Image 1 (cartoon, helix red, strand yellow):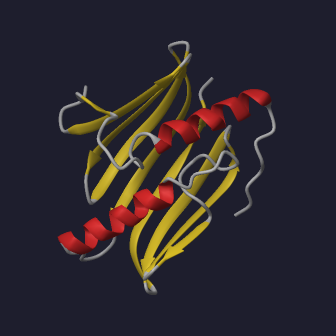
Image 2 (cartoon, helix red, strand yellow):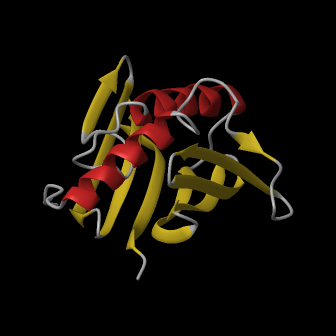
Length: 163
């Protein structure tokens, strides 16, 4: 899949905010971004800087679905929906190890592709892959984690600007 660079100043401003917000919410090591969830059974993470506000609401743990939304001056301007998680039979310890690795990969998100993590990241027995197409304005992608050569995690996502 081919990725097109961020080209407009608003796109760049949004991309920079997304990188900052994502690095300070799910990908962060702590739990400071968690707030009381508005929807029963969900988890909710939030981050704010200036006119921008980021909210990530998701359901589930090892298999999950959710939505990220960015607001500017209280108006929703960007969203991403996602669904995925552990593939096959994964034990609790193995799942914890793979999700720790996922958070590590997600902290490497870049403003040229501010959706999930880098295109490729490897550490020890784990490999992270993220393939996306289009731009911050409209996109879709898939992220995968392999342990050795075995697929153990997959997530599909799509989104873009809200008009």
